[in-house]
Image 1: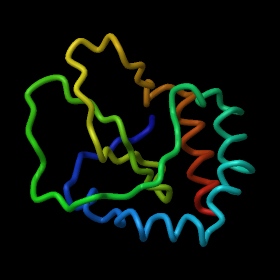
Image 2: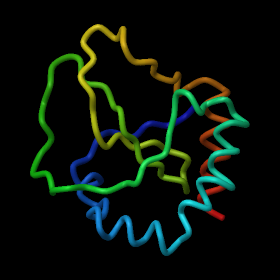
Image 3: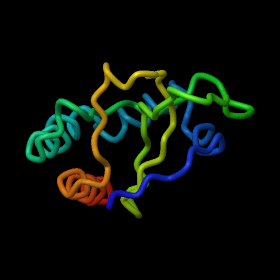
Image 4: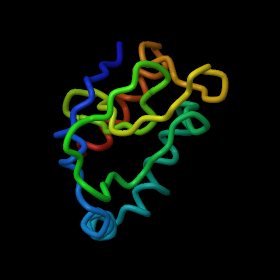
Length: 123
């Protein structure tokens, strides 16, 4: 079963600012990684239409999480590759669940993908 961690303001705030994130991405050859490694992995596991990659960054630091009683679902995740765990970072409002397809994080297919993605990230 894929493990999903609780939301944490501290984790969100630990993401780099946009300029630092972009510099790190460029220094690591991020576009080559996306084209040569991540893209094929997403296609191999058939998740390219429901999951994607993004440049993890923040524009401002949060003081505390906004509380919502209904409709908020995680839409942006970070990957804790050493434990193959997902960490929610940002949320979308989806009161009726009719417009967004969410993966079943406990499905064997998604678990296999997250394990393969974690292995790739840890190389």
